[in-house]
Length: 261
Image 1 (cartoon, rainbow, N blue to C red):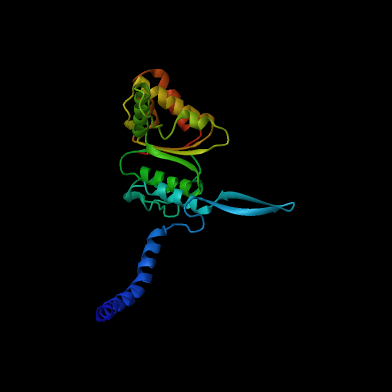
Image 2 (tube, rainbow, N blue to C red):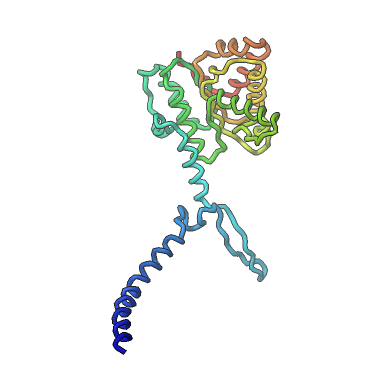
């Protein structure tokens, strides 16, 4: 009897302690089981479900939710180098210390950010800053955008071809001429340092196919180069004279030429 009483005496405090601790444990476990959603409305799926009534019947359907666009914008803008994070159309200011022609070109860009531009000039004149301001505008307008150096894009082509030939897993390049030949699908394409590629037969053929598709289907193109128009023609002509004029003519046919030398 005394032993039973002693055991009961020892158990009661433990029981009281468990009653106090159990809710805390449950709430912690529950909190761990509940994922943290960036968007509670769509649970980060990018789509919401809703019900509609038609002729007395209830139909359930889904539609894209606005948060998915915001996530896409943030992802794209996260690739912008820190130096150009503040490069936006709203923030653009004329800086004639970089080049006097900025007084002409900056207002032009601000007035028509959906246009195409051939941004050429010596180092430090503000070409890349203008390009990123135009890129930011295209992203915020939810355009299909591609931004990279021309050399990066051509390297992706080479890796794509090599992987295909070796029966390896293939990662498609971020942009192919075939992507640009789809009606009703407009791209905004930003190519930095187009003069930095080493001309070869492969390079010239791929660049021609790309710019020809951009030209034929009227996509926005913004490019930067340290070469003048004539020098860029001569650059691609090093392989064959058929390329330089054909490539550059298509690049500048519908673009505003901004040369700052």
